[in-house]
Image 1 (cartoon, helix red, strand yellow):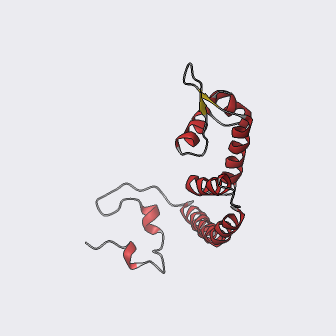
Image 2 (cartoon, rainbow, N blue to C red; image 1 turned 90 degrees about the vertical axis):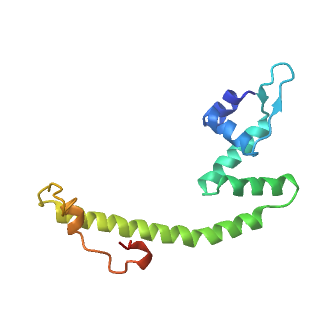
Image 3 (tube, rainbow, N blue to C red; image 1 turned 30 degrees about the vertical axis):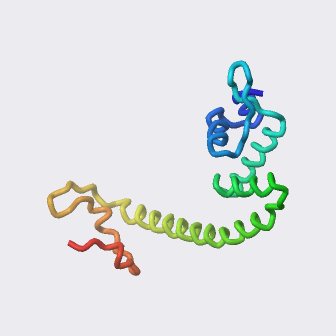
Length: 146
């Protein structure tokens, strides 16, 4: 099957298929007469595997490593478990950071609901943002020195 056929079967764009070929995740044969990339049913299964791995948060480089292990007859499962186990705490931390950001945004919107719009006057850029309290635990590297 051609790129477009593989893409349609997997529910992705042809550009996604081409990207995975460029990244070395898919290895199509070339048609001897016209040079078209030709894919097999096994390529479709591999593409579906890539999609599942992406759904779990694996990056292209990690998927390449997983596929390389499998292609060489080695089980990638221990590596997969280790990658997810190490990533999960980072994801939970990022979720907490995003939740805190959402709460700050909600507080700002509530506080700004009745505030008038201001015009920059050389001393003030946007009174809404300037009215918001400075972070209590601002990292020194976050502040610019004049």
